[in-house]
Image 1 (cartoon, rainbow, N blue to C red):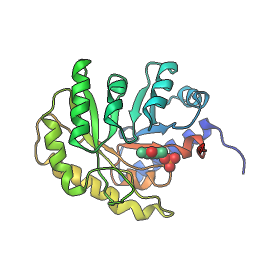
Image 2 (image 1 turned 120 degrees about the horizontal axis):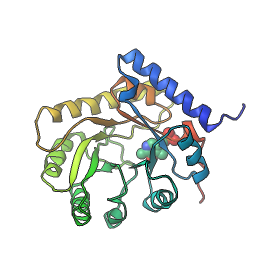
Image 3 (image 1 turned 135 degrees about the horizontal axis):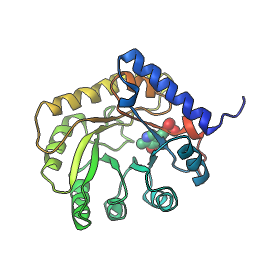
Image 4 (image 1 turned 45 degrees about the vertical axis):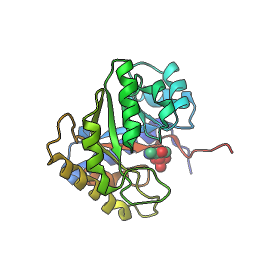
Length: 234
Ligand SMILES: *Cc1c(COP(=O)(O)O)cnc(C)c1O
């Protein structure tokens, strides 16, 4: 198979998002493509940046900081991986959105560190919709209470929900999980909780982002589909 460039990959993903939007009666500009650049070298991020990408997702604090230092300032950095409380202080004033908040203790730490830097951090509550043992995230049952508790904290603002669906061959298998996350967000919206919004639904990855878009995703997180397969050093 012929190698595709990052530019070609990005255009292909954008086209497929646009097509999924069209089919669902949604506007393409309502879906943000987050380029998940974890493990990839800065040169590859630069290439994506030159194609117009301004949203990058990373799952490790140190790697995000290293890339933050050398990449242009107008990038919106998305923390999408599990976040340890002792590392919160390094990123609160650098990230645009933390997608992976799944406990009140973590939210309290973010609130505290954000207060010290006099910033307000936007976060999503991660929900383990498929109830997978290997995944982080609050349960569907606990999501609303967690949002209510975080809503009372200063310097942190809930902007929606995130989920990581199971790895599947057939993306359609994840449709019920995406529609469940949407339903939970609508339920929470109905509670009229002060100081929060449910405007973001972060769901869908390389294997299933079109299905996620058709179920209402506003952010899709695509790594492999843009940068190619990842190689992990052991
Ligand atoms: C790695 C990762 C992605 C991107 O996965 P791909 O299958 O490569 O698109 C998306 N979301 C999270 C939370 C990730 O850790």
